[in-house]
Image 1 (cartoon, rainbow, N blue to C red):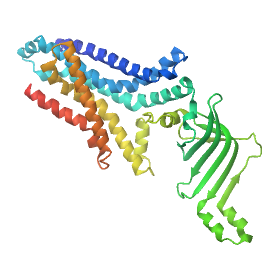
Image 2: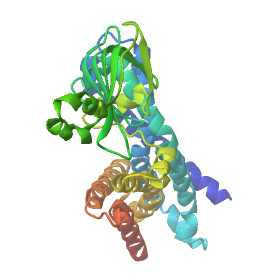
Image 3: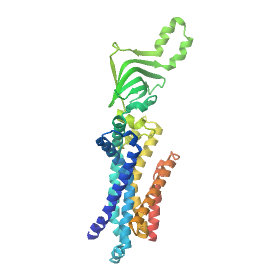
Image 4: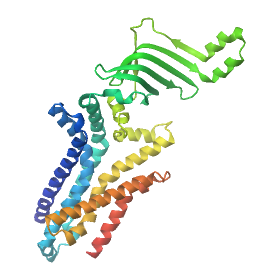
Length: 377
């Protein structure tokens, strides 16, 4: 117990220092990249925006902090011959390293929780705050795009007024799942999109059966009216120009911004969404495959904390002689891990039958490397 407490006191300070250091560096990077949009923005909003990014940032920096923890702590113990004294007392290296496994395991569990439950929601809030409050561009970046709002709806915007949050030149489409040639088109002069409600004004609704359109060219002029009615199965025009139509969307306004406002969408899928995509009936095979890849990625990186603790230990025993060297070794190991991890993610796209092999490649490689080096240590 005394040894465990002593080793824990050695391990926690570099872990906390590394977490704070790497989080601060990444947060400064986010701030620097977006600095052009932050002029005149209240400091409280900027702090809130940065705060929303912390859960996702922690998932990324924990592996670096764990490596730093092991290299700094065990490097010092090795350089000052404390490990020799511990082993002279009949305590093996494996026994001395138990606190490393416990702490790395705890970090891994926290990272899994952040990755699957906290970060997806904070990412959505972060993107919504960025576009609506910081840049004040709102849905401007969606103008001219056809975006899927879920619930069978797709939206096209001809324009958007960020000052009033008013949509302009709106077109909404909904196609029947059982008959892809039957669709409902909604045209609207304007509207708003708040939460999960699309509210349209100056609208008209047309339901068409496109399969019947070719018959119009062969229809007798006297029967043309009936044939047109078979094409336009429903036409709905409001009684009043001020009438409003409300549609429930699958994606909220913030989720839509998170997915479509940037060239790279925010990582907004958590455990509930991924399990739904994997188990819900009538899901496309491509969507199920992407959900498998995403779920494994969100597990592999957090559990990489345990793998990296194992891989860093032999380097700590051999090279961790000073703080500067320890920091350098920690960065080299972490960067190498991330490179292999990214290569594995890329390869997983070429392995549709078993994408998990590519996604877990970095953990497999570094676990094998750590075990091999420990046998020689």
